[in-house]
Each structure stands twice: as C-alpha cells, then as structure tokens.
Length: 154
Ligand SMILES: CC(C)(COP(=O)(O)OP(=O)(O)OC[C@H]1O[C@@H](n2cnc3c(N)ncnc32)[C@H](O)[C@@H]1OP(=O)(O)O)[C@@H](O)C(=O)NCCC(=O)NCCS
Image 1 (tube, rainbow, N blue to C red):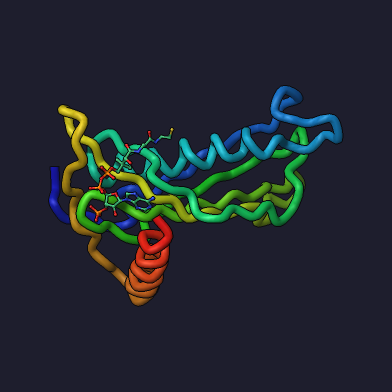
Image 2: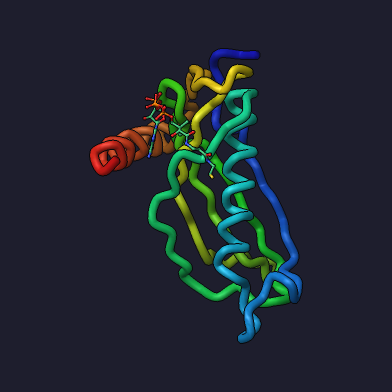
C-alpha cells in the first residue's frame, strides 16, 4: 500500500435510482435514505485512501438544498479533501441527473470525517494526501480550518 496518494486515487461516484420504498408520502426521498447513501459513498472514498476499514466519526451540518423525487437518478460523488493522522475529511456531493438533458442539479452536500481502524480495532495512521493542484491545496487548507472548529466543539 502506498503511503502517498492523491484525491484522484480514492474519488468515488455512486448512482442510485430513487424507488418508491425510498420515498415519503409527498413523493420525495426520505432524508435518512439519502444520508445513508452519503455515508456509504464517503466511506468507500475513505477506505480507498487508507486501504482499511474507515468508520464515520462526524458528519458536519447537512443541508437539503432541493427536493429529490421518486423516479430521480441520483449521483453521489465523494472526494478526499484532507488526510490528517488517522482521520480523513471527505466531501460528498449529491446531484439529481435530469433524464432529458443529463444536467446534474446539486441537491445536498456534506463534509464527513472518517477514521481508519486496524485489525485490532485501534485507530491507525493513513497515507499522506498529495496535492496535485491549487484547488487541492485550497481544499486541504479549508478542511484543516473545519477540523479545528470540529475538534473545539467535541
Ligand atoms: C471515531 C473514533 C474511532 C475516534 O476514536 P478515539 O478513541 O476518540 O480516537 P482519538 O481521540 O485518537 O481520535 C482519532 C482521530 O479521530 C478524530 N476524531 C475523533 N472524534 C472526532 C470528531 N467528532 N470529529 C472529527 N474528528 C474526530 C481525531 O481528531 C483523530 O484524528 P487524527 O488522528 O487525524 O488527529 C471513536 O470515537 C469511534 O469508534 N466512534 C464510533 C464510530 C462509529 O461507529 N461510526 C459509525 C456510526 S454508528
């Protein structure tokens, strides 16, 4: 396993079709179902980065910006913003893909923290995240600020 990885190495995309069992009485998706997809997509990206089991330590405030309806195709993407010692910040975005135009409309996004766990169940160090662009550097700096605020609240 490499001890240095880029965000491209763990980038994850997941597509879901919103079925009737995912909906509420007004025909939009249950928030809890969408949260569970967010958790799964984020965890896959974190696990791809650390090649370990990664547990969810925190989910920052989540805003549902636009409704997701039964019948919609939902595309989730997860991208590593920063790797700290044993924890990683992952940004998950949820978009609805319009069937006719393939245009993707942003519905939800979330910043999540995952922690790598070893075979004995203890937290363990994760590979360094190598920045490949100014955007990567900006994301890492912003993630470090969010982490400081998160840990202060803990
Ligand atoms: C997350 C967990 C592993 C942290 O364990 P811990 O004994 O508190 O470990 P530490 O204090 O050494 O923290 C380990 C890392 O987690 C980070 N962390 C812990 N709690 C955090 C929080 N609320 N928000 C953000 N990061 C957090 C720490 O900053 C540290 O990161 P670093 O090594 O990169 O500096 C532990 O609290 C746990 O197992 N929680 C349950 C996770 C779970 O089951 N999730 C599924 C949802 S049910």
